[in-house]
Image (cartoon, rainbow, N blue to C red; front, side):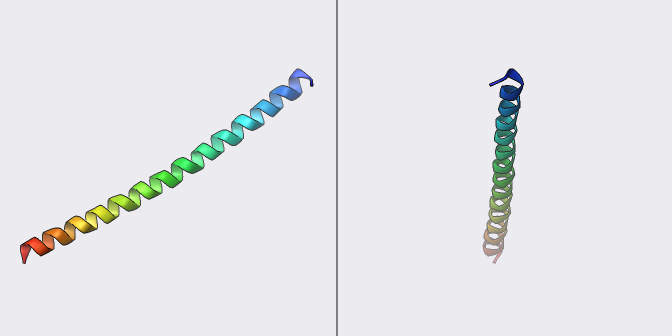
Length: 52
């Protein structure tokens, strides 16, 4: 295997790993945002109940 070919393969592997990591991060941020919205709604309901 030539050094040029080995470098190309290493770069492909690195790029694939980086893109996978980005996808996981984006999914994680989406889940965190959804959880924050749910918590805010629950807090609003608690305040509404306490005001009654």
